[in-house]
Image (tube, rainbow over all chains, first blue to last red; front, side, top):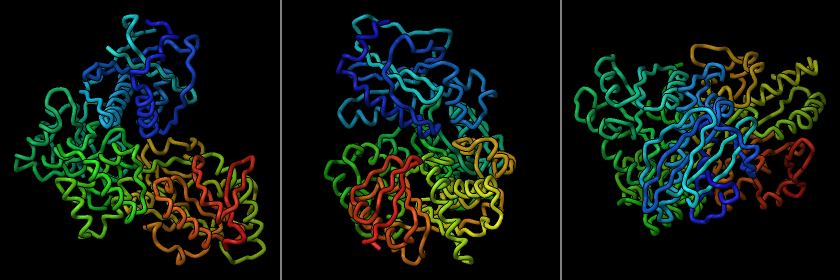
Length: 160
Length: 125
Length: 284
């Protein structure tokens, strides 16, 4: 895991494009309007669900949406119309994974306009207690924290 | 009217089914193109298909091309619901015979609008 | 490759601004491109040049409506923008109820100008009904109101008119108590009760047209639709809206919307509840 203060200093990853894509995706699919907040690693919740996909172009990027059950439940509930109590783990995981899939798709459309070209992998999910993605120390990365009520999401992009 | 959604995401299938049901129709679900083909063959008249593009196994475009070659199924209108949002993809799908195109992310209003459009403005009362 | 060239994009941009009053933002070119590509399907064209040719030769009278419909996708929630509903409850409604007592027989007229799937106008009906009940007002009722809701898209109006909402839509902004009080649960749908649903007249209407035959209103909602329009069309809409608003009437726009040309016609009222507009004396 790279140190938090190194996270946003790189200019090469078009992080805001991914943030914009996430805001649009979440609003259209669930009606929630997320707000980007300053991240302090202290308050960042432990993650239990990570939706991820690889963007393969001249340079490859790993795109991750990291969250927990407590955040995923209202999100997926508003996406599907199923009460939170009736949601199972499979639907929660699927919802988060589908969101990152859509974020990748919209971000690609934005980026192609500025000549970044890449292919999208199928999305996949990592689940477990307090899970993290570890990358080599000098890897460029981008991180944004987005919240709405009890929903708390971290969007991370790593240059591979 | 009976409709079919083919998507590997259970969440997306659930959203599509909610829109179909509220408009007074019935929705079958398949999580792969192969399962979709089987449902088409086994079920009574399916009158509208919602189709994801990127799925493991047979993809949506291959599914579309397959049913458009089949006399029994080629008349069923197909609504593509996909993250493939580049114009060249949309045109490829048009050429393969898709009748509506929805890009993900979509709102449920947009989805219902397209269903009503596909049915020529009619809904069950 | 069939992607839009810069030149083609400019042609479409100009055409759509002239005919539909929609301003296509350069920064959103990617979005517009895929929306236009979807229009190819509606227009049964296989390339952008075919579509442009079709538009230029105007062989399809509905194409303008379809362009607007394709580009303006409007998500709606129950009681969207809490501030505007507080304005309606705490300021507008008490004023109107007092006024209508002074001129019995008349109706309080409301227009939802971009009604979409109906949540805005139905939210208002629920709000008024709750207000009357909570304040034990019995001399006035929903019968003293007249509700008009219009949209450019006949498809969304079909949804609105039916008043059937799916489990996803019903969740967004509506609490369980109101849901149980105003809707019946039938199969997979929540159906607004007829006493409320049948009060609204839904009509297809293009905001580019004249407003005069709509009559005068005491409240107009025009939220989250003007953002798509060109400066010229917006100004025209403000002018026309000023003409159909009664002297004490309120105009409500989206919470995040700011338009400078409004100042020519409207007085902006910022309150602790929220913001609304009234017609300027000079613009009447």
